[in-house]
Every structure is written in structure tokens, then in C-alpha cells.
Image (cartoon, rainbow over all chains, first blue to last red; front, side, top):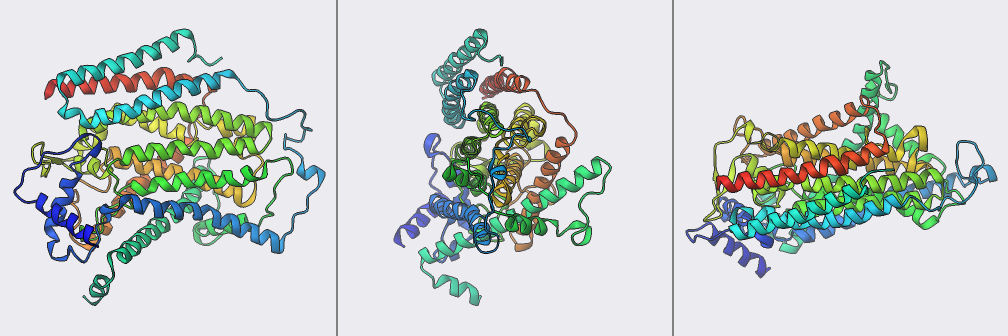
Length: 174
Length: 368
């Protein structure tokens, strides 16, 4: 795989004398740096080994398949066993909804408290905010004073949202 | 060296497949016994706390109990009640387990095995923590689906309680770690461990420079408030006492898993323990130095096979300590009331986490 050997060569260049500014932000990582220092010690074998870090997302895809198969195997086994050795013996009582022995009345899919819904909306706002805060945290050391103040402003706006919701009593569970 | 030649003769693609398969099998093969024995440890420990003996019949000291439990889960009648939505009912246990497993992929559980090529992390993502939070928030689907599909009032209430609780504490959890990443300057989890071992990148060249480090360079000592919030949020996210409202036995029988039995119930159970184990692993990685120890040069990546294995052992040891903390707390504290729980999440932890971000930002800014 040509791509691989060239990336490796590039990386070993990294560990050479060329000073490279770390890239912060979305291409995050002086990670390249750490990898580069790793490469130095294994220059002799670098063509024989794949760098796991070259394909982290491929690994993830393989792992996803494993993770999906993993719970399906015991489920399938149990089903197989049930099919072959213990066929289901349903009855009206056994099939009834469990409510501690009392007969169930009404539908279970009922309307539920609107508070849950409000929390859902506030959650959405704050979760998106948290996602914005991560790149801010990573780029933090290189921020200019303007960017820093802008970020504080952004935080302030969201704090204001929280204070508003608090005063409205949305955050009080009734 | 014969083995190495055989390895070298493979094409890179074959090598990739081989390495990924070996690593994944290795990780899952370690995780599974841990889950099984976490259940046993929980039962034995709670027995000791309550002055009982606990399961001690199957094998020496009850050590084969997990096998017996597994056999029982498979042999029980695979019963599907008539009133459920069948597809979702079957899907929910699997959906509970999958995210728990997926989080494992980005956690560095060791340095390497004496060769810096085989790093002990399945996928060394440069956005590791974002991936983790993304996957963790998927965990709520399994529970909501279980609550909905079972068509039972207990399950339904358990499901919505759980979802509201999990999304509330997810915010506190996400925000609590932001100061950590301000200090570290990268979202990669290996970088977090490097930082705690004193390997900090030079701002000009990006190359790692070894600074002096010790126990105090662990992030738990630099960000104690962040750790506290993360710890409590981890309890809430995994539905463990004192936040186990979704499955509170006295009101909701079993909550979202009331209508489940046999293997499907076992999967929920294993999913919960997998979540507990992985949040322990996250805490070890983020706040307790991961696989490093600040003595005997153990904060450096391994240069021999033995040291590499020792690093994995250190990681597992720290994780086990957190696991025991999870279990200990469960049998020591009473349950929160639901309004108190929401109150703690929204009106205490989120403002605290926000304040922690601002204070850390200003302190770092002033120092720089």
C-alpha cells in the first residue's frame, strides 16, 4: 500500500529538524507529534508494520460490526434453545401485563408529564453548547483576546438562558 | 524472528485485518470476564455489607457462579408476552449493549507491548472524547425503546424517567470535562494520559517534551471539582444507586425491564455492568493517569512485553478500584427523590460545571 509508506515517510520527516507548528482546532492534535516520536524508534521495521493509527475509523467500523454481532449471538442462542427444547407454553395469565398481581386497567401508552418535554428542549440547547465548548477548550492556548472574550460572551448568553429557565420555574420539578 | 517474517510477508491490508481482529478479540475477551465477575463481586460484597455470606456454592468461593448464571439465562424459557411490540421488544436489549461496547474502542487500556506499533487502544481517534459522548448518548435509546415496547405502565414510567435523567446528567458530564481538555489541549484520550504523565507538547514544534511529573500531575488533583461532577454524573448515567429511579424496585418493580426475562434480561444486566466498567475506565483515563503510575518509570510507554502487560494490569487495577466504589456506594446510600435528582442535575451541577469552565479559563488566561 503506497499510501501507507508515504504517510510513514512524512511522519518520520516530522520527527526531523523541520519545525512544525501544532495544528489545533478540528485537525486537533499534536498527536502527530507523539506518533512521530514513536516512529523514530522503529525506523527499521516501519515498512513491515501497519500503523494502527492510520486507520482509526476503519478499526471503528470493524468494531461496530463486532459490537452488533455480540448481543445478537446470545439472543440467537437462547432463541435456538427455546425453539428446540422448550417451546413456549403461553396462557392468558402468563401473557397478561405484570402489575403486581392486580389486573391491568387502561392503556400503558398514556400522555406523560410535559415537564419531560421541557427538559428535552433545554437539553438540546445545552448539549449543542457543550459540543461548541470542546473545540474552544482545545484551541484555548492559542486564542487571541478577542476570541477569548467572544467565547466568554457565548457562555454568558447560555448562562442567561439557564437563569431565565430557572426563574420561569422550568427547572423545578412539580 | 520467524514469526516476524511471516507477518512481514502479509499485505498491509491483511496485516490490518489481522491486527484489528486480534485487538478486538483481546479487548472483548478481557471485558466479558470483567462484566461476569463484577456481578459476582457485587453479590459477594453486598452480602458482606449486609452481614450475609452471598453466593459461595458453585465452585471454590462461588467463583463459577457467573457460568451458572449464564447457563440459566440461556436455558430459561425465552418468553415474549403477547401485549408487547415484538420488534422493538427484541431490539431493545441489543441496543442497550451495543453503545456500552462501542465506548471501549477509544479507551487506551495500556501503552504497548514493547513495540510502539501495537498501541493498546482499538481506535486512537483524535476526537476520542467527542466520540465517547456521542456513543454514550445513544445508550438512552435502548432503555426508552424497552420502556415503550413492553406496553406496561411500570416499564413506560421507568423508560421516561430514565431518559430524562440521562439527558440531564449528560450535560453536566460533558461540561465537567471541558476544563480538563483546556489543560490538555487535545481531545485525544492518549494525549490526556500523556499530559498526566508529564509529556506535554512543545507549543512551537508540537513534539512531546518530558516535564517532571508525579502524583499531583494527575488531573484529579488539578480539577477536583470536574472529577466530582463527572463521578456523580457517571452514577446517574449508569442508573446506579443513589440514582436508580428508572428501576426502583419498590415503585416500579424493575422499571424498563419489568416485562423482560431470560437472555434478554441478562443483556440489560450485562449492558448496565458494561456501562459501569466503561465509566470507571473513563474516570481512570481522564483523572487518574490511565495506565501510568508515577513510580519506577511506569509513566513511560513500555519498552518490553512485561512492562506492557504491567501497564494493562495497572489500568485494570485502577478500574477495579472504581468498580468497587460503584458497588460500595450502591449498598450504602438511599435513593434520591425524583425532584431532588433533577434539581441536583440542573440547578447545582450545570451551574457549577459552567463556573468551573469560566474560572479555569480565566486562571489559564491570566497565567499565559
